[in-house]
Length: 277
Ligand SMILES: Nc1ncnc2c1ncn2[C@@H]1O[C@H](COP(=O)(O)OP(=O)(O)OP(=O)(O)O)[C@@H](O)[C@H]1O
Image (cartoon, rainbow, N blue to C red; front, side, top):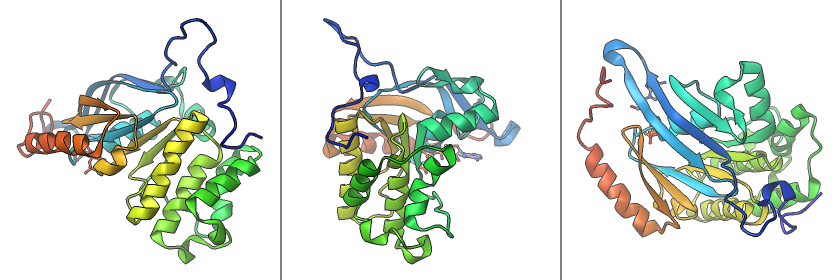
């Protein structure tokens, strides 16, 4: 099995040819609308969003509180239903799948690191990390797993149960679990939210490395401009719409954009007023 320093797998490389085109997106949404509630309590969390998530790229999603970041991530990951619109992961339209097909697709192709992602309390850290692969009947790539565990600094915690780990250590186990199966796409919701800045930088550096060295695709929701600066592209959401994209972001550029969006969000907008649209 290949280790992290080995070549990018052929299925993640552009087709050979004189002028290879861009890779097909790892995920995309067309006219994605998600509303919660009805009548006077209806809230439009996502408003006809069109988006493409670049394959083999690190994409950050930012925006003011309530702008729809988590909803967008949950819909793209097939964890939440949509009100209208279509979503694809790779070539598969997930909005056309039944629940069983969707569960299988998520299991085999998607990695998750969510802020409140629970580890199973009766299993050790190592068992938690390898559980998704065990359930799917996949053999875990030992070299890769070792590298993941070393980089995340949890090698001496593998036999501990979650209750014996700090919040930051639990978060690192969750990151290792998402990376263990080397899925088509990883969705991370504030993956460094519970980590001190040094551990956070290590995790972000590792996510960055998995994109650069393995062609992994990572989508991350974050409130932190420094975390977003590890990404290739930052998508900015406001009022349930993507209002801006920043390529090769610096923390300062992200901070400046966020300042503008926070100013804009400080007034109530039509889309988010209960009963609006
Ligand atoms: N289950 C739900 N029921 C009703 N409204 C919801 C639900 N989930 C989200 N919303 C609403 O949808 C909108 C978008 O929420 P979402 O959590 O996606 O925003 P966010 O940008 O991730 O916010 P934050 O940064 O505060 O986590 C908000 O107005 C929120 O109140």
